[in-house]
Image (cartoon, rainbow over all chains, first blue to last red; front, side, top):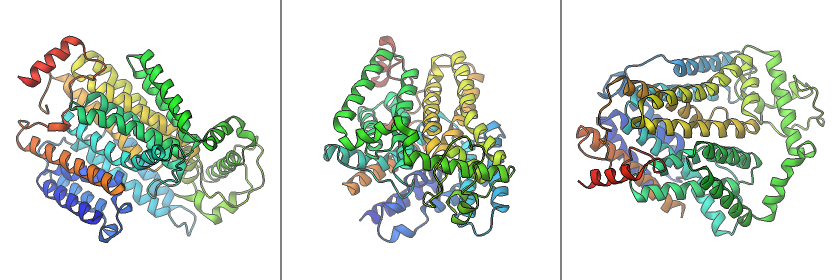
Length: 438
Length: 59
């Protein structure tokens, strides 16, 4: 039955996509973040839905079938993305031999690059931006809904174990936390009461899903996200009251095991799990020191042969005392060290530049919005929420290996697209507020 | 439960796509319906703007 549902939806989207290339692009984004194949058990499980929409969308854009699209512009974000993908290609080419997922990660990064480049020409209006944000928020939040509901139904006893798309509970928690600012934006801007209240309910369920993961990094992310939302709020006192109430509800709902686990954050030095992370960071920094320009190759932290090659090295973290290597944790345990080990210092600084660029773009958008008045307030508000998402990624990602998740790159490109719209809108004389979509 | 959520979520995505398709095909004449958005965020809107919006929407 699920397979028929997905098949029906895909056929409908393809039919519309053939006549309007932006719908094919929406399908590409939807299938990328929602990963439908992981939720069906029949014949649709093996169909490459994402590839179908990607090929259709790319073809239509290359043949300039979209009348409303922009011309391609080589701006700061697209250049950084291209450099980052090229660095990934160089790292994959000079990687250690027999690395299982080296080229798979490289191909994934090029798919993300393709999606972002198509986004830079396709998302040419506020309506398209809003619809894309809506579809991405729906696709991402779907993964957390069930766990949020199960946490309520179980009276706090449910433990979310992660998701095939994102990985274990820690990866899952950070990715989910990144969606909340976007669903909050939809709550602020949706005209219909159903969508508005739905967005609020989804935000709360996703936060509960993060709690259900029992991830300490996830809790940290939620904290950062709450502070980001408060900083951007115009009613700060009311915001503080809401946050305090939410914290009270979470503490009341969560089981003792959750409270005990969160309490261990204070004793990181004695925590075996945390020391395992420090050991992983040492290995990744040692890889970067040995191969500063290209790193050890993509996915190097997960390779057992590379693990033992660098297991006893301290990298530049020799001042931290760690137990002897046990050969168990084959992960980088941090987006920063993941990129550093995989792509060397060149890749690492490109990655930092990409993340820093998000903040710079947000400042540029805010300046333009301030000069333009309330007509472009939506752009400033959306940029604020996207930056809060990036901040959650940067803080939560410091402890998990999710550097190559496409959702982050989508947000980075979306900020650039908003900037271009704001520049174009502020260049023309002000008219009455556009109400085309209403 | 998961299947029901999938049904709602996927239907919503297809409906959003259809609304946008109809909107762009009509040259902006048709709206996004239930997925329409506001010019101003809820926490930013003044009473005057709210009155204007209500008048504008229902007129």
